[in-house]
Amino acid sequence: MRVGIIGCGDISVTYLKNASGVTPFTVAAVADLDLERASRRAREYGVERVLTPQELLAQPDIEVVLNLTVPAAHFEVSRAALEAGKHVYGEKPLAIRREDGETLVLLASERGLKLGSAPDTFLGAGLQTARKLIDDGVIGRPLAATAFMMGRGPESWHPSPDFFYRPGAGPLFDMGPYYLTALISLLGPITCVTGQAVSGHTERVITGPVRTGERIRVETPTHITGLLAFESGAVATLITSFDVWYAELPRIEIYGTEGTLSIPDPNTFGGPVRLRRAGEEAWREVPLTHAYATNSRGVGLRDLIEAAQQGREPRASGRLALHVLDAMQSILESSEARRTLDLGSRAERPAPLEALPTTV
Image (cartoon, rainbow, N blue to C red; front, top):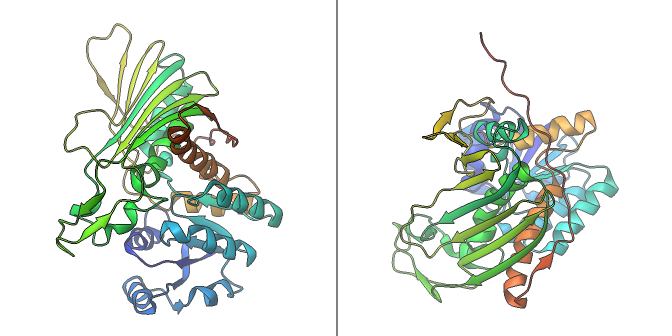
């Protein structure tokens, strides 16, 4: 299937590189509101057509739209693509409002189209190896998990960090999808959440090489704690923050009846995966059992294309992304309401990828 990219910002570079590399797919056209930026990407990566977004949606040979616009535009662009009869895969989050995510999932179902969303890092070698260890019962029954994303925010390095501090972003909506998608892949769907959310500052000062000294107004919480209950009976603690100078907490740990798994950064595809079973005196690194150990963004898009051809649900599906969006929005709503909230959405654990053949 031929893919058209809408949105030619920084993340498009990774997808365009991988299109002819680790996760091959065919890019037929690129589009952006800034046609010069789209033209530059087309020249750099040998894409034949440069179009406006409206022109791209009208192209009959483009069957899949890769939506790489800013979060606030995800819903409108994806809806327009579905209404144009295109399968859609987009960057995270699926939308910035639960209601908009529900609209996209329903529209895709009504039109018989596939809808998918990043992150696809849970399909990488590290998290797939961890999934296999859990499914094989290596740590027994998973009882609990912890997940931490602790940092100071992107204003020290990102050229345009403003949107990170607007509704629909912040550390939870920006980085939470990596952690929540990983946890759902490992432990299954979430049933209810309890949240607490605060902001450490009302303004941020850009300290990076571009726009140094400019002030950014903070319009969304920047330190969020969520307690998650899973259908499987497991529970987890999730903290995402742009207010932490230094931390030594692990990225993700899964605690089972027979041992503990240390999971790699869910914003990456590789390892290390570390294991310590009951009675063992030290941690040990587990060899990776699956493919995609390097930056493989696009594997979710490739899986969606195969899902459309095979008539199955994509692994990085719209329903999974909606469940993540529902969890994130519910954590913030729980903080405001000061009570536990049940989730209205549900998503099955995505089917695992096949392990690499073992060598004798």
